[in-house]
Amino acid sequence: KSESHRHSTKIKKNQKRTTMTEENNDENNNAMEVAADATPSTDLLRAMGKFQRVLVTGGAGFLGRHLCRRLIRDGHEVICLDNYFTSQKKDIEDLVSHKNFELVRHDVTNPMQFEVDQIYNLACPASPVHYQYNPIKTCKTSFMGAMNVLGLAKRVKARVLQASTSEVYGDPDRSPQQESYWGNVNPIGVRACYDEGKRVAETMFFAYHNQNNVDIRVVRIFNTYGPGMHPFDGRVVSNFIMQALRNEDITIYGDGSQTRSFCFVDDLVEAMVRMMAQEDDVGPVNIGNPNEFSIKELAEAVLELIPESKSEIKYLPLPGDDPKQRKPDIAKARKIIGWEPKVQLKEGLSQTIAYFKNLDMGRYKKPTDHTAHENTEKQSKKRKLEDGK
Image (cartoon, rainbow, N blue to C red; front, side, top):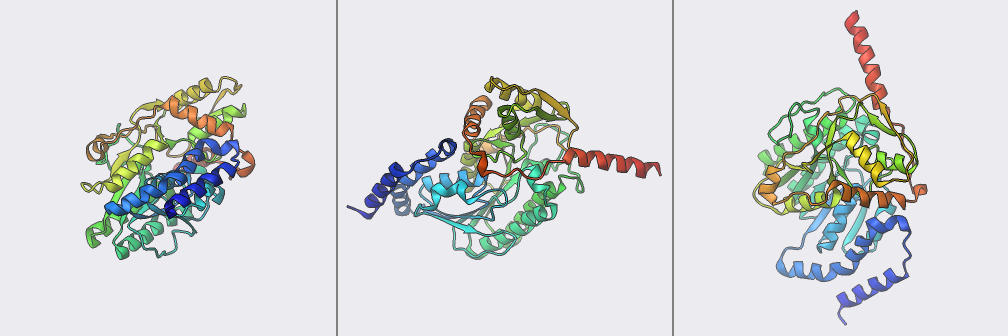
């Protein structure tokens, strides 16, 4: 028998011997199928000259591990780089034994040396409770991380994709947001470490592209959700689901009229892969779901999908510089990569709720309390006092 056949048979036998806990089923079942199916795909890609060695920074995070599994499933060789600030090795244990997967513990603020064809730069805490925990580190991760992956891309002539964010638009004064919009960002607010960090990272990417001809791609990611989210990441979808499952008050910051557009993680990963593969445009390109929902509507949808919950909605002060609207204009994505999201909100929420219901909470540590709304009130009082002097 061929080596690839023996490898595939061995993996299938190992799968039968492996007893997976329920909390990993929704996220990891596809990953186990990846391990069994990747070898012939890899051989085919090599024969076609389309095989890629890919570095994914932040590869153990929410988006990163979904992307790693997709790339492995497509037959590529993947190096996953992460410092585990918001993730843990257990999150990607299903991939560790795969022959096309390599896990490296490393911080992107330090230089790196790899021989790769493509780089996806996803490394940066993306939720308020994480990026506000250490604002200086967040700034360094965005800026120095971009500088280091761009330096690597320049040296090895790799194509590098920057996972930017809709936060570069700040609190927009127009909707929907087009890529040509410069944004409305407070450079010294409580969210600035993330917003401005991502903005300067885009600046770095285009500086390397224009000055050194580095092959770049830039996507601006809007709110994304799905199985695999950290239960305490402070994002609105995970917050509402966890609160509803625990029969706690669902906390809405502000009056709930602010809007967001929620993109399911599988749709997002598909867009990133397409953006990396296309040759026509370096970006930036908005990636998100253009269907707009108010935060109150999201809370009501979660409660509808968890009818046994006894939770009630509670309103708290709006966090500092929290955007009132988030709605991407995805005309450019439709034109350049032929993409638009397929999974609708309730379908995606149902899958995410099922994941959280079966989650082993003993694996997760609750981070520092999110006090952005309190910080906002303190800053507002301080400004009033200063203005009154």
